[in-house]
Image 1: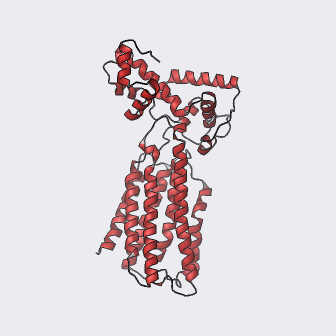
Image 2: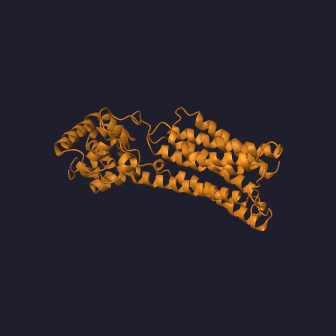
Image 3: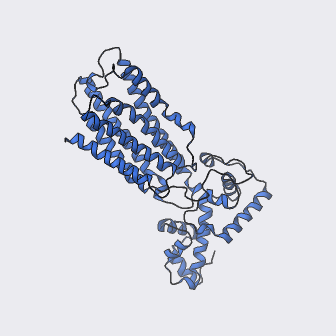
Length: 388
């Protein structure tokens, strides 16, 4: 077994193992299912290539090398889309993202399978099918670039809107690993394209582009396995569903929440809703949940997400993150002033009050009270600080 073949078996084993691990989680979310699909797609590609080495007359390697990768970029985009949204069901309309793959696959097997050679060394050969090879290359390259850009754009919008939806800060929320996967896949494809272009110009196989493709795809499979298994669902609560509270207007899209919001309540309505919200926060103390989200709180008080956002942004002049953590900070200061909690460390108190990050707690505390938590506790003891 040579190195190239070994890479194929490694990639196959890793793809199948990761697909099994993701697919057998206790709770398999829609994004998880999409990752499983991409990993099984990788495994299918590796299987075709392995069988091609053994039975070349029965398996079409060109199909695996070229057409199958057309599906991965759309899958990565859809994974990102569903990960940062609260949708739980796959939209049939999203199948249109795979239309280029379907059309090209049909065209390939119906018209070009036995007459077009996509090998690098004959790619620029002047024959009646040069336009076919060039067209496919353009479609493949465009698909990878377009879906990479769309994935990045979706992540940028989501990150800008994090504090409007989440009451905590966490590295998992940033989803930087998705950028890494997209860049890794794109760069792997570009390396293969550049190497293939060089072979085409030289009209001979100078660089083993198949090996480069195998290494690149195996690397992507490993990266997806590592990061995908570690990535939790961002909307884990029972409230995080597509169902809206009864007798409410449809919930606006997440992106719309980051735009300037116009008042939708009269001052009297806003005052009543604000009082209801404050009472709920004080009595039910949902802020003690360290991973409280906008969707959860809006469902608890029977308001649509866009209505709660409007109430906070327009009438209370703060975002969701600031609102929830203000309650957490006040709970911390009350406990710091209570001798019954002296046996606990400050961070233990902060954790009990809903903070799950020491850096976030310290930063918000100093920003709010102009003192570190330990200094503030000393000031409480000598009477120079007032309890919130």
